[in-house]
Structures are given as C-alpha cells and as structure tokens.
Image 1 (spheres, one colour):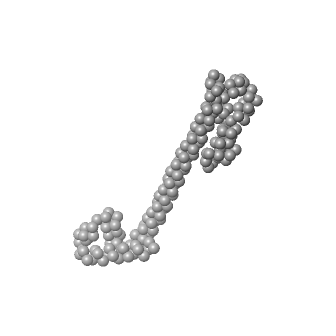
Image 2: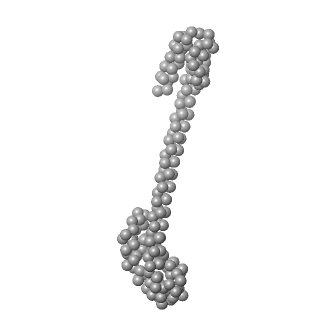
Image 3: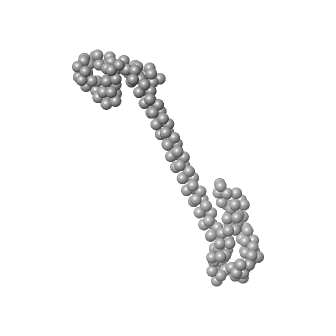
Length: 175
C-alpha cells in the first residue's frame, strides 16, 4: 500500500485507481449506512472518491500503513459534515418559511386595515356634524362618553343615544 501511495502522490493515475478500488468495500459500506435525503448512491460514492483523492494528496508517505484508517475516518467526517449542512439548511428553510408566512399575514393585515380605513372615511363623510364630532372624540381619541356630553353640554342619555346611532351606522356600512 505504501508503494501505491508513493506512486499516486507522484501523479500515477493507475495507482490512484488501485487505491480507490481497494477502498471500494468501504465506499459501499458508507452509502449503505448513511441516510442522506438529498443524495443518491452515486452521489455518495462520488463524494467518497473525492475524499480518497484528497487524502492521497494530503497524507504523509511515511504513514502509508495507516492509509485505510485515515481514509475511513475522513469519509466518516465528510458524511457527518454533509448531515450537518443538511440540518442547517433545513432549519434555515423553516425560519425563512415562518418569516414569509408572518410577512404575508402582516401584509394581509395592512391591506385589510387600509381597506377598513377607506370604508370608515366614506362612512364618516356621510355622518352629521354631531355624529362626526362624537366619532372623533369617543372612537378616535378614546375619550369617555361623559367627556363628549360635557363638551357639547348635553345629557349623558342623549350622548349615549347618539353613540348608539353612530355605532349602528358603522356596523351596517362596514359589513
């Protein structure tokens, strides 16, 4: 094996092929034991071959007797890295999908709110002066009805009846 490694490091393609063939059982074992959803058998086999070629380039020639163990560990690390990348990608996609859904919901809410505002403007334009004033003080400024009654110097009962009338008009026209 050390002789094959020396020849492969010098660029002998036949030696590289022989090392890959010697590692073929390891490659088969790897793609049988690893479950990667996005990769099929040929993809995993190709990744393993690339790892082997990378190991051939990087390994010290004096460690030739430990070549197979080094290749096995490198392939395992590569498979772990692929799984990790897949998990990160899935998490990112889930976050993006949630953000898109939230943005879509907020856009829909904005559109509905704008439509509601347009409808309210049309309704308020058709109200009398007293009704518009009540709408502004009680509904927009969120002041109590007693405050409106005091400002207009009217009884609370009359203010309440006016508020009921405005509320009824709003309900009828918003539907």
